[in-house]
Length: 136
Image 1 (cartoon, rainbow, N blue to C red):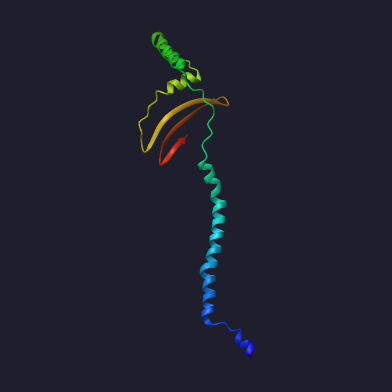
Image 2: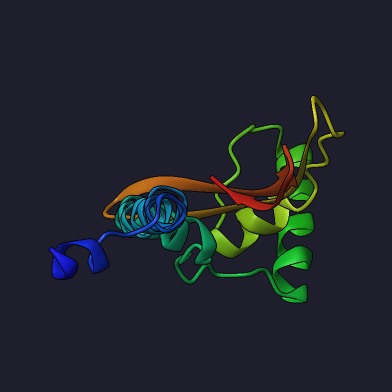
């Protein structure tokens, strides 16, 4: 009888132990499970959005390309043929003239042209919509 009486815990001790379990241990377990789930779900999209876009090597125009472009434009005006055959670098020099004013929160900074797998590809570089750089 004496042994049974000494093993009884006071109601305050039971309350402290149950409060510790309900308000500390269970929320900690839920936080750990939630953090693990969040890491598994959001780690790939975060990595995908935080890495810079890998753009192909684009033939950039040199000063000679600008001069060739001007000569070809003058020749087509004189001949009035209307056909202007340009290399990639000359066409990119022509696209450097494109100046689109900012519109709806987006500013187009640069337009580049290249050919991939025998098809033309345009790359639009700009910023806006709360993004530092947007490549399309």
